[in-house]
Image 1 (tube, one colour):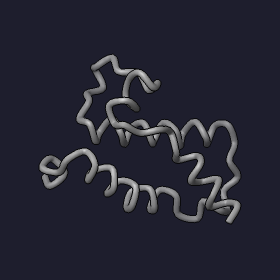
Image 2: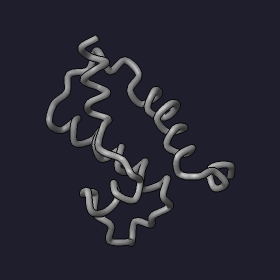
Image 3: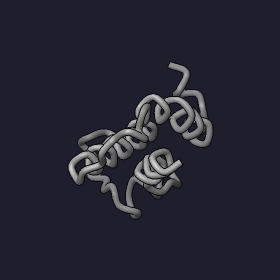
Image 4: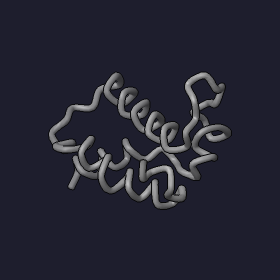
Length: 87
């Protein structure tokens, strides 16, 4: 697969430009409840986990010490949703 041959920076650009655009389609019309916010954050963490090829069996937390540090990212999917909603 092509994603295996790309470096981390390129993978992040692909995820943010394609996957997030599809996932956040029509986000400006959504009503964000606590449950839907949790689902969006879980989706974001799942993307970073898959990008880094981390198995579900590994004990890597979603906190700053774990997964986000490895990906060199911050949680931003909710912020992007909020910006789309308030444009």
